[in-house]
Length: 369
Image 1 (cartoon, rainbow, N blue to C red):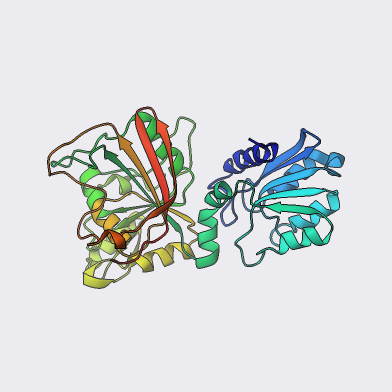
Image 2 (image 1 turned 60 degrees about the vertical axis):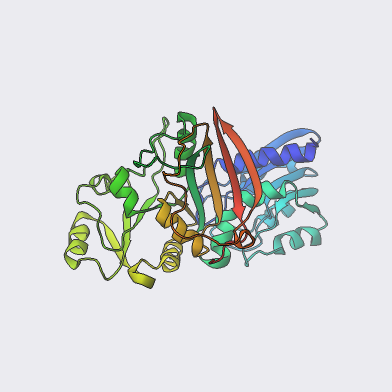
């Protein structure tokens, strides 16, 4: 591994400390190197705080002059809550800048790199580009479309079942995998489930980590408001806000009851008396949701897939076998009839959590069948 890649990996590790905390900004990490010594580093912790480059420059002080800057995202060139980072880099006397990926924000869009080069600074772009692009994917989706990035998370047995024929699904994945999911919940902005999951599992949809964590917005798709009044989602509203997407088929009295409990409902009429899922994503995007974690069940998963609304897949495969032709899968209902029409994944990667294998990938073609 080259030294350039190693320093960018360090910047990526720093950026991940702010992941899920910087909305509406992206997570960014920066490292300043003089000779072969790291003299400054930083990350963007939250909106309104200095950007990663500023923290790194402050730490480096006079040692920044003539040094190299490694930053996961193109330095900004516009005035937001803080000043342009490109100007600060120039003023500090940085000699070279290594950039992971250009900024997808139309307000920046290469202008930061252009400003650095115009000042005589050598700039190289594309260092660990895939990893940097993956890190800012929720921000990139939201800043360019107004919509959240949707990650479908599921756990399946080796023969592709999410539950047995009786609906038993606890637990397919092991403790290490489930801990990883809670770390993911701590970083996303919202979790989306269908009312079937609420009726069957009565989930909390909260973040439960030994060190604590942040609870995302909980969103339930419930066309007829069948959610029980004593559902755990409704009993602990102080721990996490809850939003229910429904239709005009729902009882107005139930809407009022939920309102008295502190639950917001959205009426979004779609085809066949169901919730309009694209409209729901628009609503969530307008509320600043950048990363939405889809946790099913299978009916909602398939509706999202067929509507072309899934951006990323995250599937834990456990070394267990259900067997038989019964049982449940990730998706329910009609799928594509030809493999040529099937959505495909790119940037596929895998990791191991004890005996479970996590497979992840970006959905690059996900259109209605």
